[in-house]
Length: 117
Image (cartoon, rainbow, N blue to C red; front, side, top):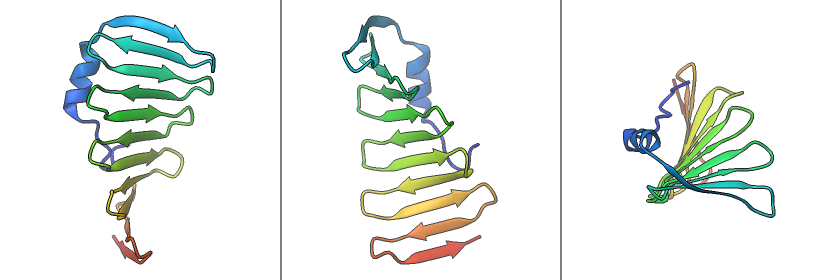
């Protein structure tokens, strides 16, 4: 899967060392778990699972195999399981798409596109 989709090591360590302190079910059917390290995990009725860390870094796992990471600096990285590509979007409007075969597409704020292999 990689194609530059990497979950930062510090979040992997947080996941290994957490202890559940409360588990709630809200009126929308969302199951919310809060851990001693302030990490929150929300499981939605449609199967989507969202993890929110205490520094607001988020990882969202979709039922279809897609994964999305939202970083504190505004960067978003989306792994598309079916299309086998990783889309990285930056706060400044630049979007980079990297495919399994190594093909790169760059999209700029002004809608110009740059392709490379």
